Figure 1 (cartoon, rainbow, N blue to C red):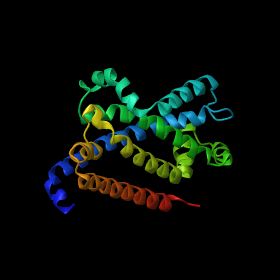
Figure 2 (figure 1 turned 90 degrees about the horizontal axis):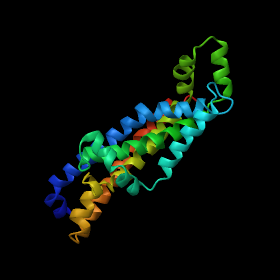
Figure 3 (figure 1 turned 45 degrees about the vertical axis):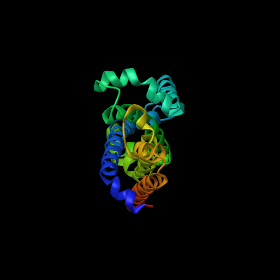
Figure 4 (figure 1 turned 90 degrees about the vertical axis):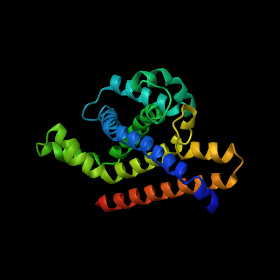
Amino acid sequence: MFESMLKYQDQMWQSIGETFVMVGISVGAALLLGLPLGTLLYFCRKGQLYENRSLSLVLNSIVNVVRSFPFLLLVVALIPFTRLVVGTAIGTMAATVPLSIVAIAYYSRLVEQSLLEVPRGTIEAALSMGASRLGVIFKFLYVEARSGLVLGLTASTISFISFSTVMGVVGGGGVGDFAIRYGYQRFETEVMIYAILVMIVLVQLIQFTGSTLARLLDKR
C-alpha cells in the first residue's frame, strides 16, 4: 500500500482538493441559505411567530422532495440547470450545484429540528422584554440552539462528503472518483483501501471538530 501511496500521491492530493471544493461550497450554501430556510420553516409552523400554513406547506414540500430524491438521479436531472448556472455540466464546479441544492434542503430540516428543541418560554421571554423579531432570532433563538446547529452542520458535512463520492458521474473528481478510476477500474485493491482510509480520516476529523465545538457552545 505504501508504494501505491507514493505512486498516486499527486492524484490523491488533487482529489482531496476537489473534495474540499465541493464540500466547502455546499457547506457555504447550507449556512447562507439552509439556515434561513430552516428558520423560516420553524417560524411558519402552526402556533409560531410567523405562522403561515400555505407557505409552510410549500416549503416543506420542496424540502421533502429534494431530500427524498435519489442523489444520482438528481445530479442527472439538474444537468440543464447546472449548465445554466456555471456554463458547463462537467467538472468540480458543476458538481457543486446539485450538492449545494441537497445541502440547503438537508441542513434546513436539521435547523428546524434544532430550533424546535428551544423551550417556547425563551421566545415568550424575549418578546416580553421588548426584543424585536430579528432580535428574537439572533439574540435568543440561535444562541439557545447553537450547539444543536453545530452538530447538525457537522452531520450534514459528513453526508456531503458521502454525496461527493459519486460526483465522478459528471467529472467532478474527488476522493471517491479517485478510488473508482485508480483502484476499482485498474484492479488495484490497495489504492481503494488507501482512498477509503483517507475518507475515514477526513470524517473523523470533521466529527471530532464539530463535537468539540458543540460541547464548548453548549450552555446546559
